Length: 276
Image 1 (cartoon, helix red, strand yellow):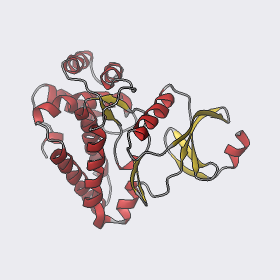
Image 2 (cartoon, helix red, strand yellow):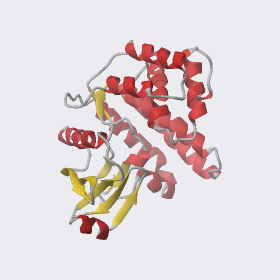
Image 3 (cartoon, one colour):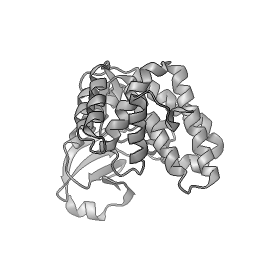
Image 4 (cartoon, helix red, strand yellow):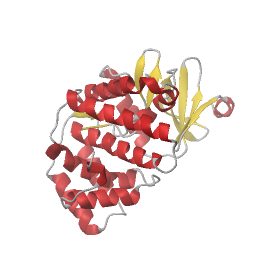
């Protein structure tokens, strides 16, 4: 199998894995390092698929290829949503609404097999080094007062992890799929939207910035229509996921902005991320 991996066609390469064409109608996701969360991706993908969500079928879980861990999935043809929308800007609002509808459908799905998100957040925030001890303890105290849940949560739901296939949207990369409160997962996507737009402000062309502002505005509005929530219920989860992201998203450039948001939101102060 190692020789086949070397000769297989590389389809995509990310920060933690490479994806190869692997036999007819299949792809191999081959990880760059061995970590426990690979087994969770197998479990979460299976659970989501069995729940009827648009997820690639799992063919083989955690196989060894070239002394690396890999997962074999059904091959889903189609572009990643990020690239598709930049080539079809006139379709941004329509696909943003469909993505929000898909996440709302996910959150209407209750599961029991996956690990609880609250426990993962506790551990993750405990490792969030950019936060000083008092702030970290305040976030953990806040998390301890929040309600759990049994909703299926992706925890990295955004256009990079959605394929626009000929049959509709397909969600990939379930590495941190869990069960929990839907507002926690939605707050995570909200946070990604803030970091996404902040990143574009550092040199992206104006038309690109406008495209993604339209996408995220439409997306967040549509989700709120489908699953109404109060700002008071969402804000604690926004604080929690922003703190957790300091561990999850170490390579993202907005560390100072996330730390300032956590401090401001804990203290009831204003912050740019809550102004629109």
